[in-house]
Amino acid sequence: MNEQLPELIDELVSTPEDASQIARSANMLEQEDADIALILESLPVEQRISTFSALPRHRMLDVLVEMRSDPREILIDATPQDQWASIFSDIDAEDLLELMDSLPNRLIDRAYEALDSQQQAYFDDARQFPVEQIGHWLNHDMLVLPLNAKVREGLRLIRRGVPSYCDTIYLLNRSGQFAEAVKLARVFNAAEHIPLVELAEEGLTVLKATDENVSASLLVQRSGYTSLPAVDDNNKLVGRLDIGAASELINENYERQVMATAGMDEDEDLFSPVAKSAKNRALWLGINLITAFLASWFIGLFEATLQQVVALAVLMPVVASMGGIAGSQTLTLIVRGLALRQVTAANMKALLTKEFQVGGVNGIIWAIVIGIVAYFWFANPVLGLVIALAILANIVCAACAGVFIPVLLDKLKIDPALSGSVILTTVTDIVGFVAFLGLGTLFLL
Image 1 (cartoon, rainbow, N blue to C red):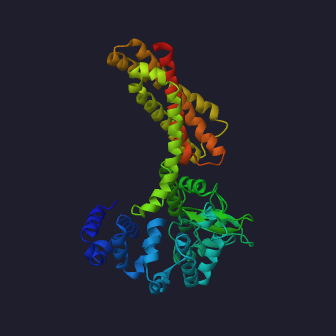
Image 2: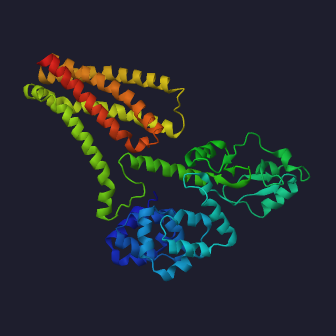
């Protein structure tokens, strides 16, 4: 984060009456669009609206594009209708695709009319693909030549201008199908009469427009190119996925997973209305309540034991906590592996064996440590043995559950990042409590 941003946020929040003046100040206007978007998202709603309305009209669109959906929608609703014509004056298909989920239909129509015919065609093509596929997010600004072109034609094309994140010329056959790609660096160093096809790259990955966002974006990041071509089912070139878009898609997916672990939407506004925030979070609070009652029910089965051996109640959180942490570590590793397509049926057995062994080693180490602490704390060697065995059992079980749960959820087409932690916590709590209280009943009564 830019070092000036916290100061600007503090100034806007503490002096709301000066929001318009601050928004037009040099300190604000010299910030990147993404930084201004971040500042606006950090402001209470009233200051956010007044600050945005004071921005130069030509920057409003770019700032809106950089914002998350929820805070962006508040600004869209608060913007007077007579300002949209000037805001949309420089809009392109990529901007409209980013904004369309936040814009009401009447504004989508106005923005579409502001596009030129080529941008309208790009927008129409992109809408044929769902947002989960790269066809929705392709860059159509490319360097393209026929397959029989020579170096001199490539140099002429380059002199007209090279798009951002573009390091290759794509060669097409007479049917418009993708054939080869030539690095710009090789064009500069070749004789003008040489056919470009003789300089073509080997092993270039060609994407399908129907490829899933994250997997295709990872291919771009690992390719060594600043973008990769994308084709349709007939091998016709439809665009390219550049490293900028790929990085943004991966970052959004990561943020989505982080927020999903708490049952929240990555677009949620810091200052969204109380009712909306409460509604968004209520579902997972309810699910957590059900799992908590389930764990409590298992504890209730050992009520007589707890009444006679109070030390068990004191130590119960230790057993649950150790299992929960051990399971979360494995769960995080497996969720990442699933997202990167590293976990398959072929390596599942080896992965499970490895995590079982890690759980066993950590289980033994911490079982000994906690057993000794419990022994000296309560002067009861049998209690120390009971909690040591329970810790060992729970950590090993947590490691195995951390592998099985996300893999099973993934097969059921349920996002393991969203619900895996809730299920895992329930499993480790129940296993830990049953093991600890069951052993306590067996050895201490």
